[in-house]
Length: 393
Image 1 (tube, one colour):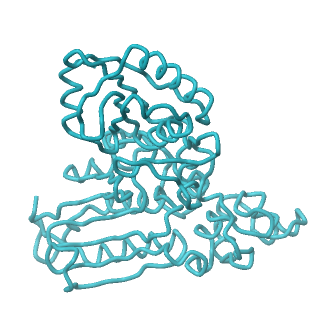
Image 2 (cartoon, rainbow, N blue to C red; image 1 turned 180 degrees about the vertical axis):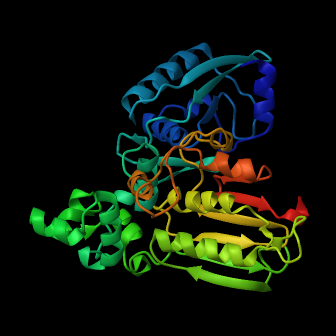
Image 3 (cartoon, rainbow, N blue to C red; image 1 turned 45 degrees about the horizontal axis):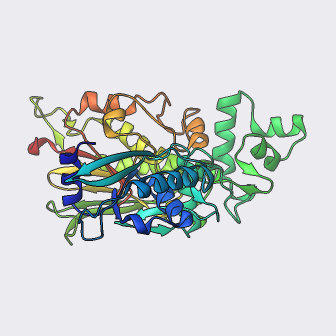
């Protein structure tokens, strides 16, 4: 790092990616391990050693540099689990030496200190991770646990919509479900275990959301809250239509598409007076985006999907920003990360959802709606697909 770049970085003050420390403050491996783990669990960052809290460069002696380098090496190797590999850079500003310690975002999250405490950045400070859901999301980001495999307490084979599951099973495997159960001598519960939809007597989230008779009995937040507003303000109190769409994923999909199609305009676009117009947003785009919204949300977050129609736009909002290092640009180019692999694997079968599982859904939506806007908001932990309505383009 060049001196002028470091001066500019210091001038911006401390934030979630930058922290100042004086040399005499860097003595405690436990504290340093927490700082490093917090950066690794978040988006990475830099510790500037030799800068006080006010942003004044106080510098380091050559002895400080040797001591701190050894401390950083030992801490990163022995006191952060799993180990990390920070980089150090010594930069001179006006004859005063500053050590820049760069901690990259970790690829093996979550990271903990020697006491097993997970840390994340919270503004310019760090905080302990205490909630089970947040730890689960961190494990999910490392592909160590998936929300759709987690057992749903109180949900059993008796909660399965037998007619729905029977129709799916026969179409997928070519034999009536009752025949298979009799021939193989297994119970419905055992079959659900064999298909990874249950663990023991308890359904997992995939089993509940795919084939549950009333999933919202166990997960009341997993509904689609749909509103068609008058105007363009989400805080407005005037609306044309609203609906809480409930049911399994198949029903959520069908209900959401129905809400959208009845609230979007039919445009003539040069067709004759007696000819039915075309939906202002192509049906193909709606199908891809709604399926994407339902399948790829973060199910560790207890919050509903939101579908909002305004006079100038349509917004489909999913809980959970894009995972890991996936970016909006990546998904525009067809790159995908399957957040809920068990749900996704069943969605490609039968008639559950129009999902192919090859990462091209967003590209197909873009092909028919080039003005499609995609936003991954990590601060609010949301992903939004935004479609400008015809008259606003």
